[in-house]
Amino acid sequence: MREVLLSGSLARKYGRRFHFDVSSPAEAVSALMANFKGFESDLNESESRGVRYAIFVGRANVCVDELALSGKAPIRIVPVLRGSKRGGILQIIVGAVLVVAGLVLMAYGQEWGIELVKVGGALILGGIVQLLTPIPRSASNDSGNNSKLFSGAENVTLQGVPVPILLGGPLKVGSVVIGVGLDADQINVSAPLGNLTCTISSRTVNYDASGSTPTSGNLATFVFDFGDGSNAIQAAGSGTPLSGSLITHTYAAAGTYTATLICTNSNGYASDPVSLTITVS
Image (cartoon, rainbow, N blue to C red; front, side):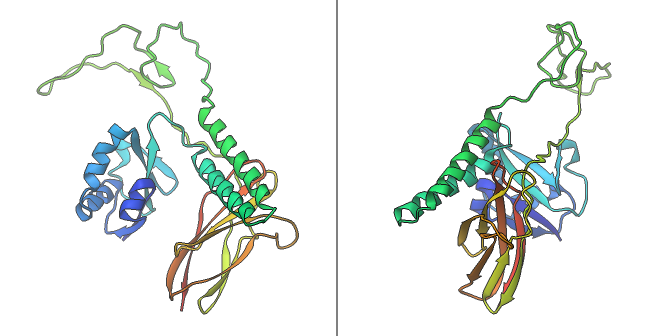
């Protein structure tokens, strides 16, 4: 059985986590279409809404030619806005949550709510800057006549040269290199690293995120999702363990839950979600 994870609108409509007897991303998509009516039409109609989907196997973003490759790592299907960069989106979401939480706390007379508003505003501004900042182009030694319709490290088709389109049956033809290039994952070395552990007593769980590291600056906030529909946001302070990194939650019913932690640092970066599956009785 292989784990398949959905994100965004697909997760809200069909659920987030599944296990299917599949070996490749292509088989995972087929299994989802077979089990959920409307899943295929949602994928087909998303282009008109300006949404495309990226497929990750583990941490690797796979291309179309790799969809049939087998493996064991989890498969994630993630919506991506057409024409947008992915960096900064999670940061904006976390910032908005912090701003709302801060305003609610201020409405109830909690003066430190203004600190959450400040941190959230900084996160939102930082995320917007990431989305709007263009990716620098590498220097080029060509004469300026090469076609820029095709992305790549090298283009050998000159501007204005017709590109043949094959219609009908198979033909034996020659070939021309339109463009070649390399794809590389951009790793944000400034983002904090989350760490989540716990101790369990009956249905009460003591969560500990004190093992998280800021990477740059200082830890600013801890965002806990307890997996039962409730969550909490705590500002990081000082001391050992770091204040704000410990929280206790009591579950209303016995069962298995997946808790998630996202932490932010003072430079406006958010960590990748860290999940912990627990069972209470």
